[in-house]
Length: 168
Image 1 (cartoon, rainbow, N blue to C red):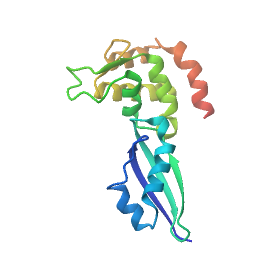
Image 2 (image 1 turned 180 degrees about the horizontal axis):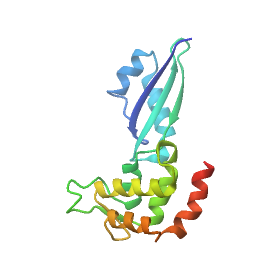
Image 3 (image 1 turned 90 degrees about the vertical axis):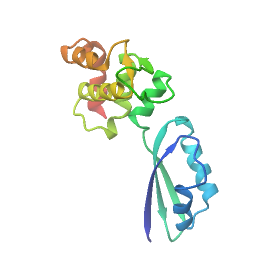
């Protein structure tokens, strides 16, 4: 029983049956149209976001499993902020604004793929990404919000979330 894993990052609900995915699926003897349809169904809830997908294929039986990961931090931030794409000039051109609660929710959803030891550390990491793509948080530069997190300004929001962080 030979197993093969194919890892791709796709646009949720909008995978096309073309390169680079189609040639790989064809080499494995899979029906490209059928697999693309199933990936689109599995990623529909992440429409418009970049989503990691893993296809585990049994090359003998041609059976496969689709595993959908959590969208990229950038995709989650842009969706929450209602922005189309990252700023080409994040220092001078802002593309959207979120509130601190949005940042905490994203940090909690990204926990499996983050190396942060605490929710506070994860939130600071997410704030760094927000800055790099041209977002503000509560109308402020994300780096100013990082300082406020360090000073304890958001402990009322972070402390209940910290329990969720430790449970998962």
